[in-house]
Length: 406
Image (cartoon, rainbow, N blue to C red; front, side):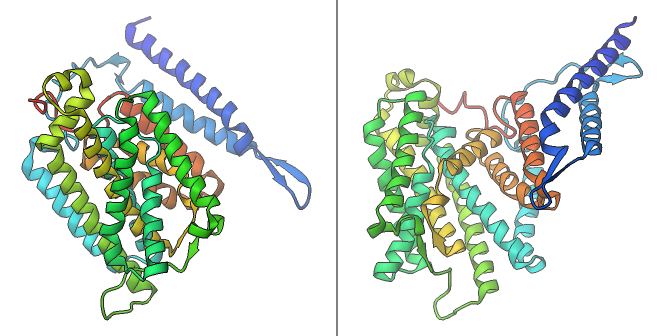
């Protein structure tokens, strides 16, 4: 048997194994259907057949992607990119500028062609972009694994709600105040964990996030407890009281502007002296200290900067939902923000923004699939992680950091 035919047969066998394993795992989800009212169970075997066929076809295409006419095309890999960037676009400035210009024009024009619901969903995606960019400073640049990032998100949301409830502070004044308050909490967290890194730092930040959530849930006199704080004002301009549509569109444009500002700030910080110090600390903490980098100052700056953007995102979230409660700031929010950084590429600005948009918008636009929505979303995440494993710096890694520490 020739080498090409042998590889084709191996690809078919592997695809069959993948289809069988996938069908076994999907069986309890797609075959039995329980009718609680009629107390009957129906068996939808056709669904399992379609799933197995789809898995077989996808696995065969993936495993046999180099097979043409029974021959293996041996294409030598090209030289690794020295600058990474947004899918290699940084090496083509004109193409990069065209992509960004088209994206800006589309983002500005979207509300005119979208319903209020769609604009609200896009606002959620932009809030996730701000969250991801803030965590990108802490995890992507400084290398500090933070699993309690939702705590700073909660601080920003509750700061706006409480300041408005007790002191009548408006949306525009609350934006910087909540950001600064969250940055102060980041500094408060930073001092006790200065000597921790890796798994130990992750456990401490996870505990901090749970402490903040439990305090908000049980201190009813302060935060309203599990019932939360309702009637948080929407964004409005002085002298103009917009309706639901107007307030939603206004908040969308505010979120878009703040997401662009966050991207600009993170990009400038990455290329600045403090950004290079963060990268050096991430690569080798002992070597960075030996080169004269102040570990205390650099770590605290990263935690405060990341927490600031989480606080700003919290204000936007409170203005969008007009209601805040501890249930909105669980560990899942921290995990999603971390997934955005990992999928987008630690240190990358454009990659993190795209990953945030995908992770927020994909589940919403899969709603027509009904009960299969999260199944498809999980499969898409698994596929993205497989592709990400083939490129360890993420789908859109930052530029090479070898020269960044000079």
